[in-house]
Length: 548
Image (cartoon, rainbow, N blue to C red):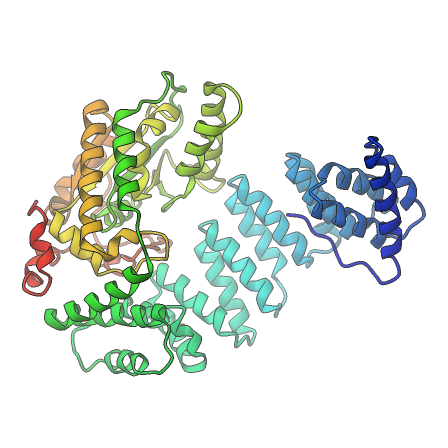
């Protein structure tokens, strides 16, 4: 998080002299930072910054901090010194001071994008996502900006879950005349997640018309997710085949196109061709992705056989954390979207923080209770954030089922909604999806999928035995066949006041960033029940899985 400008030519010698004097003292067993600041006395600002930068590159943060503290006294009005000092003190844990320094830079120069992005990253680590959006919006107010900086801003907003603001920044730049295909691709992706499918298609088609790198960015696959096809004469079919015939396609682009064709043919009921394309796509990805099946099985057994030390924190008083867990494609997105229609519920998407806090508890400093308290504070900041007064907050990361015991140690009042789906339908749905690299690497091979289904069920049965009052099973088949009854039961179990969760009137601000971004916005239907039967003749591996 440090920022140092390049020094002007002719000033490097001051930094070199100071560092040489410092090195001589260190070699003599004297580690004093005074020699650095004394040698730099009278030097211009860029020499101080260059010296601090070189110390940071040496991993001598304390010496760099000493140099910047004195430089700040000499050049208090310098935005660059404040920026560099903010980066150092933030890494030292002085977040309030870092924020104050960055705010002073932006008071003097609201368009200082390096300070804007640095302050946004600081706020993001504290879970202050609304503040991130405010800072980034303010920094990017001009008509046009460097595309690289805009992309940094878009990615920051996206990582913070601020999809509306990220899409608005892309649209602002496009309206101002940006032709950068990366911004159009980002806009298409974000607009898809926001349910603005028509404009998303316009942005994605622009990318494909102007830059074949869009094939590597999975833009054609994104197009197929914007609708349900009803006719093989739709131009997307010919478009996908045309791209597939291009010479020099990477394996990644080829697999993406094959997944798109599989989805399109499935939509129109051409299951034989869909299975053929999907088999090719999965084989291509699986060839370059080796999921550690043995390690998965060992991790499940370890969870079942090991116990955390005794002790838990006090339950939260004003809010309830809700975890929607289960395998991907088991109804987690649909359930989260419907619950989020309640005015007292806030859905945070798939937060990545449980593995982080688990690592803090296992390998952090301090005694066990202190580690729990630090982990709870870290996770709470990311769940509560600074933009909602909701009383129930949802984290729908499916794989949080690995951490049920830890979650209940951190939040004894946590509630778990465990989504289950018939194994063959769940396996087929996983096999039909192209996931982000590294996210669900087991999903491209039925032996791996079977191992995950078996392991996750075994582990969840273990948690159900240990914590029966904290976990409620939500069966996908019941959710889609009788949503009124099922959702009413879930709401009552959570203690939610009565509210309509079924009518197809999604919140205009709803965000769906999983593979279900189109389906979850449609009326609840039963078309996917026993879907595997359409494929049993073409994908016989499904018959090796249990029919339940």
